[in-house]
Image 1 (spheres, rainbow, N blue to C red):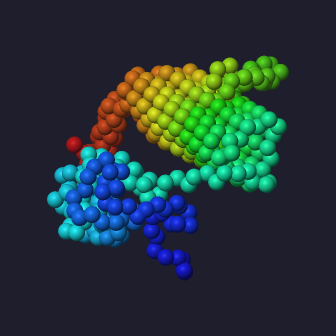
Image 2 (tube, one colour):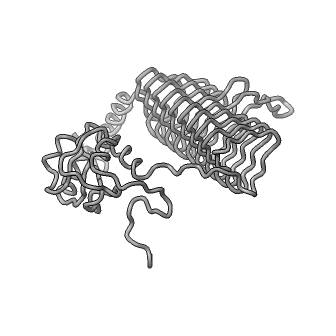
Image 3 (cartoon, one colour):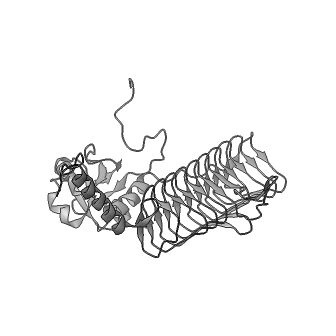
Length: 355
């Protein structure tokens, strides 16, 4: 676009900048020490565009050519790649470069702190308790009896329902709605998410449907992240619970009474039906669907677009619809391909060779 400079990470119009920092401070943030002379580093950038005042990283040997050509002042990388670093570039060797890079990037670009105060257009209900250090943006509604903790940031147009509790350091995006919910410290809810609405519960009669009162809450434990436009139903008679540190991608649906464990990862467009229990460290791929009343064991992994209709044991990997163990699924795929090749007179399907 005319008038737009070449893209650099951390455009100051949108991101907080910090620094510069000496090489030793950057290495300490990465959990390591650095080779090379002390120097000041002003920011982060990819290997291909980084200059002498910037730090970059390498976590994939595919980019060794880019490493050899980089002009970066320092690079975070694995110890085995240190000998490939060009002259004049400092090496910050760590066992897990991507983790270290996350800390380094956060050093130069920390989250924007709250700007204390209540915007004049916000509506604050009777008895709401708002910490003086919290930021309440334009057109925010805070219901009666709600509690907003220290350092919270509430984005434009968000609705914090009556008696909702936000722990310290929560970030609530624009147009989020929260009701019947208790949030622990440092919870992030991205724009457009709907948390605490009634679950999908009704009794079927000959005359029609009779709605069942939804009397539970939503509990988001500390350090949870909820992606944009997610929906999390409150419980019917129990609480819907999202365990500490768990992360939901955008567009995830969580039904009533679901209990998600700690440090789970739920990818975009997953749907989890009511009363399913998911233990700690579970990973669920995009567009997977889980029926209700299941039990998913600790560290299980569910592949993208899987249809899960039965319990998944601890540590299992399942794929397909209906979901089944990964090895079994791919054996069936291989068999079907062989049968298809035989049926076609030895000609393999496109892109495959008959064996």
